[in-house]
Image (tube, helix red, strand yellow):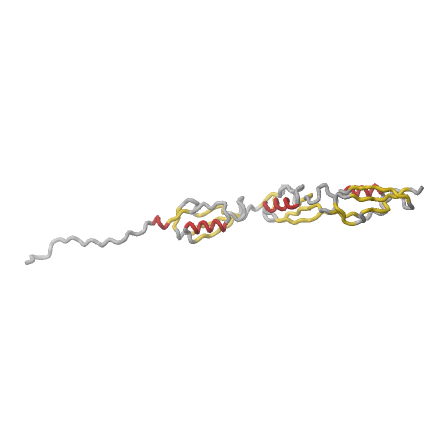
Length: 224
């Protein structure tokens, strides 16, 4: 016969269940994407396990469109549901106009665009010390600091020059005009009634001729 309730009892043991996942399994390392283009960097961060990626922009020395910083920093670990912010460079706020005088037009355009400038081109069909196809002037001038992505005008020497009508001009003046245009001058005398020493004929005629070509001028001389 029971004499009474027992004075002590062993408490029941709680059943064990599966252990919680380690918090470390929810953290991943931020990849190093500094210097990469923004789109490629964003893909790399998402591939690492981050679902939310945002972009911030700032001017600086980094190439335009490349990542210059991340938050959190590269190499650190962060929760998968944290936001990773990529700071993307918009390029420098000002740039220096490079030296392009003497370059071919294509090389000059490439040098200016690589600096972050927009190129405007004009043609010089008049006198120039540069060869055809070369840049003989740039505005603003080399070394000038200008706003990034602003316009710079290059003047390219044309393949042809515009020869004026030289009829009636003194031969010395005509020769200087043609020489300044980069043309070679050949004189041919011809007797006639025109004032001696003046141009009475030219070949080719007035108009566009190839730069560096030869122009023949017929010069009046006194009749015998």
